[in-house]
Length: 131
Image (tube, rainbow, N blue to C red; front, side, top):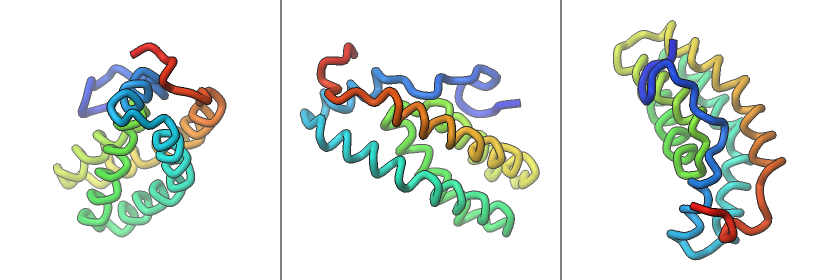
């Protein structure tokens, strides 16, 4: 069962209005494109860092890594990844490594889905997208 934000309700893979909002706030579509490209490039390493920390039961490193992924996911509208990170965060706060590892397994599979969604549907210009 999903815990945290909107428990039990799976969020969309990418909410593109979040990306459009970020472009509007920054007034810089190219910077948002670079941010998303960097997010994609760093995603496998972030997921690996979380999984390794969970296996070692290193809650400080796991929490640092999961919060980083959660925040950047929220910024680009990767709501499902954000939700999975919230599940890990909640489990770590309770000291429930079994639940944290279960949610960690979820981010592994979802990271591939997310990368495909971001790569395939990324518009060339975000500013034309409705907010």
